Length: 284
Image 1 (cartoon, rainbow, N blue to C red):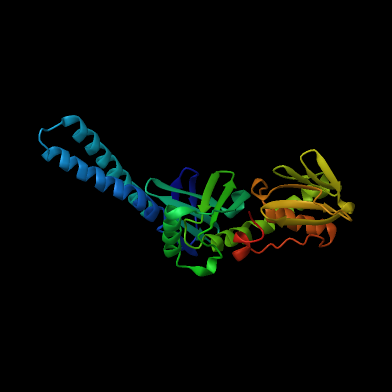
Image 2: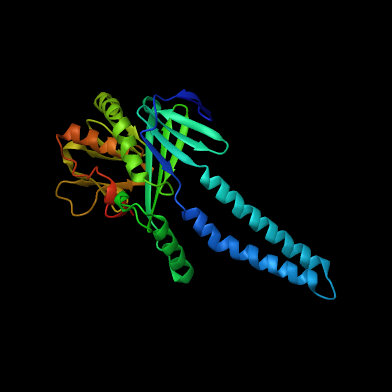
């Protein structure tokens, strides 16, 4: 199969291993807001047109709002229904109404992960939460209505974004990490042993772990853990975390923990599995 898109031309072998389609979340939420606005302004337009004496300006204003909100709602439904992520044995492809773009696994250089708990409050928030809960039928992903997952898969030819608005996003993320991490671990391990491997704001080497300007010698580190949305480095004998950085700002987070474990003989206690961990203790 051949594919043309923003990332140029790529070809993937065979049929997709997995196809991720959009959930109904955005369509439901947009409908909760846009549809009532469209109907109310349409009713106001009809009422104004039948009123006597007739006033053109209010009718034009409400009619324009009704047309804009209706058109926007239709466009959102059209756009959402056309979005699809396809996983192949040798790459990933994002398909939309405007075209497709893809990355081979061998091209991927970074995977950025952000998972945030979103607390919805009030009657409107409760309504949205109920709509999202109804839209997410697959309970095996470990995601729930309070988790917003965003993944950026970056390669030499561009990037593809994956989010919890796709059904099976966590399984797709795990498949991505399984396809690209073994190669990246070996590359980063060689870099760490040869001088230093960079992971955003974190530099890992045989000398230690540096977060910004603060470096903790490798031999003094008790643990390197991902907790509450942060990558924490703790010295031996210390009560508090020595240095930390937001996990979302560390590309290839699981490559980092694996390389750290290799350098220290398994010192890292970080859970590398995703699933429910994405929406619980590992992330904010």
